[in-house]
Image (cartoon, rainbow, N blue to C red; front, side):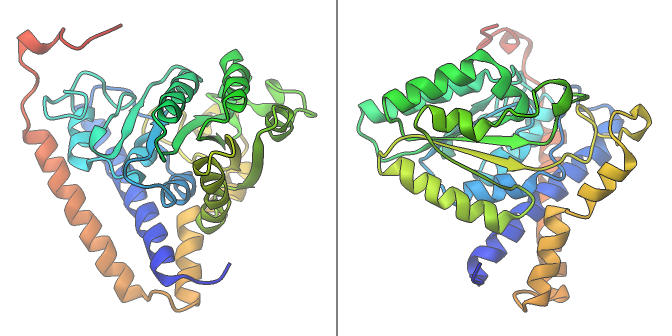
Length: 323
C-alpha cells in the first residue's frame, strides 16, 4: 500500500490511544473502584482503527461486549466512557450500564450490548430505517466469531441482502469464544465468507492486525454499501492478549498455548505499525514521544473527571432501565 502520511499517522494515533486507554483501565481496575466487568481489546486495535477511519461522523456504529476500541475509534467521548466504567452519573449511560453498554449519540455510536449476536439484528433495523429515509449513511456492526454461530446472524444476512441495506457486518475473529477455540465450535470446512456470499453479499477477509490493510478492505465495502449496492461482510483475523473478561493475562488457564500467544504477540498491530512508520520515515521516535505524552495527558484528565464525578442520585437508579 502506498504511504499516505496523514492516514497512517491517524491510524497509528487511533491504535495507540486505544491501547493506552486499555492499559490504563488494566492498571486501575485492581483498585476496585470500577465495579463492572471489562472486556479489554488489547491486540485487536487495528480493526477498530482501520474500519472507523472510513466512516463519517453521522454513520452508525453498533458493537458488542468488547467495545472500548470501537467506541473510541468512532469518536466517542473518553471522559464519558471512563465515567461509565466508574458507575458515575456523568457516564455515557448515566453510570448504569458499565463497560458493556456504551453509547454516544453525538457521533452516532448507537450502543453496545453483551448479548452474543444481539446487536446484529438491531443494526440491520438501523440500516433498514436509514434506507427508508433515503439517507446516505452506512451502518457498521462489530461482532465476534461466536456471533456467527447464532441464528440471528443468518436471518440478518438474509434480510439485509433482500433489501440491499447499507450495512457492513464486521466479524472480529479472535479465535475464541470465552475459552472455547474455533475447533470446538465449528466444523473445519465452515467458511463465513461462503455463507455471506451464499446470500449474494459482498464479502472479504483480511488481516485484522494490519490496520492499513483493514482500512483498504473496509474502504471498498463502505463504498459498496453507501452506493446502495447492498450489504457487505468482512472478517478480520486477530487475537486478544488479555483474559476474556478482566484486566489480567490468563496463561495459567492453559486453554491456549504459550507458543500460540507468542506467535500473535509478534503480530502486534500497534508495535509492528510503529516500526513500519519509523522505517519509512513517516514518524520518528521524538514525534512518537510527543504523541504518547499528548494521549497520556488526555487519559489522565479523563480519569480525574471520572473519579471526581458523583454517583447517580438514588431517585435515578431505576430510571431508564429496560431489562
